[in-house]
Length: 168
Image 1 (cartoon, helix red, strand yellow):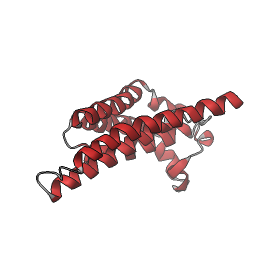
Image 2 (cartoon, rainbow, N blue to C red):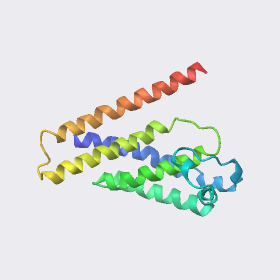
Image 3 (cartoon, one colour):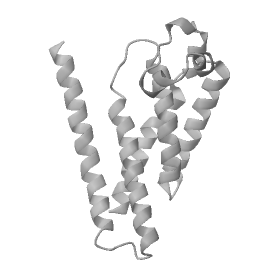
């Protein structure tokens, strides 16, 4: 079952890696700061931080760091440290992108997928630390839970998105 969860990790983090790699994020620094309306957690930052958030150097740094940690999350045996960093960076990344206009929710289920996979990897690491054998009864249950809950979550989330678009 561990192999199946690794396939999910490669799939979700790989989609994000490709998405961030082709996204022209640093171009946002050319837009006027007045049209930037921070959303999510970025909304609580002081207004002076807006100039810093959309500076070209910061956007390039954010893009490169996000790609590096996504790569480590795909490649590494211990997903959760890289997954936590990738989750935070992707949250900031998406907050900046969504601050420049129409808020499209199509990437949010994938972002939640990153959160869930990181959480499952952290739980897996915790069970290994407590017992070197890894709690034989619990470990397969964690792998099955990840394999079932993540696709169901994605299916339900995208179904709601589709239903809301059909109504408008």
